[in-house]
Amino acid sequence: MSKSTRPEPPPEAALIRTALKATRLSARSAAKRAGISDARWRQITSGYQSVGGEQIPVRAPADTLARMAQVVGVTTDQLTGAGREDAAQALGEIEALAPPTPADTYASDPHIEAVTQLLATLPPEAQEEVLRRFARTAPGSDDRTTRTEHRHAG
Image (cartoon, rainbow, N blue to C red; front, side, top):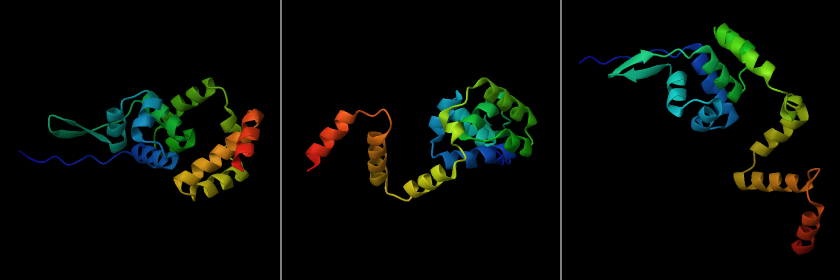
């Protein structure tokens, strides 16, 4: 029995893998958000699937790749650059249907980026404390809770 060699992953697979790392999501969580199984996510990002002991190339359908791209923040231009104009078009259609979120409004704000980078330098416990304090002082937070916490703090 001869060993099969793994097919080279297509450019879009590397694009999705790199973007996934930047999101700090697990592949399982990203797959769930994209509406596919984590096994299918792995096949698409590795560029192959095993069938009967053979490793055969995988090319994601345009709509599936578009949903994956949306989850990890890949743009239509990036998909086009990876040679997947079909998926870029599908992503454009998905984005046209989705209402803008508040996060979209601040996506390129340099102040938010600076705070995010600073927060990332802290240990997880410190990050949680900072986020807890932000939540406590956020507009619409319960002022009674804040006063009670200060009173008990010493």
